[in-house]
Length: 478
Image (cartoon, rainbow, N blue to C red; front, side, top):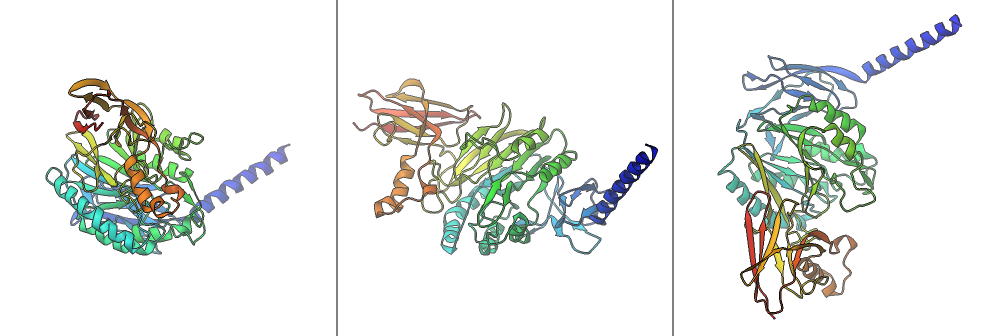
């Protein structure tokens, strides 16, 4: 019995030593410094995507970098930002044989107020699509940024994936457009930002990494933190699974140790966390596990991918903004399949309070609904229909007829008559079949009211969660 215990003890010791030696073989120590000019920056978080270190009073750090790591990079702290190349912040360095990685940051505003402009799915497949991006999106975006600069010292852009449509050759052209904004533009990898001809999640994402750096990263703005995550596990030839990985969950868990409890966290990804379109699988793969890591934190989720606009309640406190596509219905219609106009979303943090609005391309910021007359809806032909794409449970939708208040409108599932007309003009009216993914998609951000037979005028009165009122009046032609 004693001999058995001795042998078992030796086996355990060998196993522990082997594990330790294996860990040493899989990582190596590197050093560096983070500074801004002559100012050495203390308490800056540095990571390789797996482990973390912080800088000391001299701005110096040392850390174990995994052999599998592609980058050493910083979580840029409040009041500082990474220098930009073609509009994209370069907060990272590719891992080489070097044992030293120094980072020089630039000063930014220390204001607690800021604006985030979140755009999803520009998704250009070719030069024609890219020209449409330049023509339709960029002028609107530049005008919005100019307006935001009147109020905010800090403005950033986030592109929530599908920057291109399986054509990474267009990335340099997009980066030049991002540079024209003169604000930092942060990328998120989407399912069409992979090299689909390659094999496996790592190899297919090489083109993205070469152009934009790490897929998972974070930075501070106004005391809050933006955390960007890759939620796609790609195989090859457009085959992928929408999911986080255990490694990402561990990385976020480690990152949270360096984020103050009072900071708001913006969790940015391509595929939505709340899969409202899939009753059989209502959550992103490992999405619930990721949210468990964030339990007790103040956070908002931003996503794209669906070409549909929905504000989803993840629980009684936290929201996800699944933002409609900047390209509309893949550049063939000015609306997305759910009837949301092509556009992007503007978030503002001012005096400690968050607000937001959806910005439709070519429209004023107060353009928040479209109203349809009786006879335009196939499903509710007797009703006035209001499409209110950024609606959430704290909005109020009421109506009046002939200046008489009629109370709340009824929320219904509908499709957009505008989108039906646009997509038919491109396909059905020309004798072509509408591709399945471009078919009109029903949604619940519609409201109906049936006017009296003798009614002449109907007004839709919408009040958003921030108390701002929008009105739209239509004449009933009977």
